[in-house]
Image (cartoon, rainbow, N blue to C red):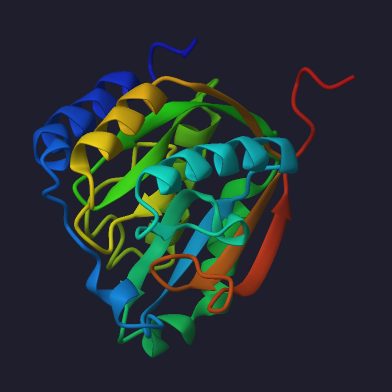
Length: 239
């Protein structure tokens, strides 16, 4: 990353890997109970970006390698792949009071994205948690961090920040590739594939459009309901 003021994402992703690796290499994973139980009834409201076709194809190749090592796990469908800018409110079963103010949430997102230029996120390899495998994204400049700050401010100004950053303060630019729904059948084989993919180059996502959507935890296409789309100005390097 070229901007030294950005969070040290490489160290952050490495720390995630180091925490999860001893358990995952032994086959000790956290299996997602909602995926095993069918459709997720929870809903949230999230501002997201989607990978373009070329990057999505590279993501798919990584998924193929992971599923070849352990086909029982949950593969994030290509239609569901995304990078979260910010969860305006985290998925919950009690979502109706939040969605009653969806117009206010959309106004906050519109204010935060106003006059913002498109920006790039480079994706390079994977990291892991005990419950999932994630693509590592690295913003090329400070635009994503600035957008998140503007969005938090806009939500706070409208009294919509009650559940903001409830689980953790989002600083990464990751995209989830796989979730564990069963203990690995061959932990050593899966661990070898994970290690081989840790730093594989994937490509760049140019964030030109942002989507505000109602979503379940997994951004399942069956659950996603579009609320608004925001088109960013051409980047400063555009001719």
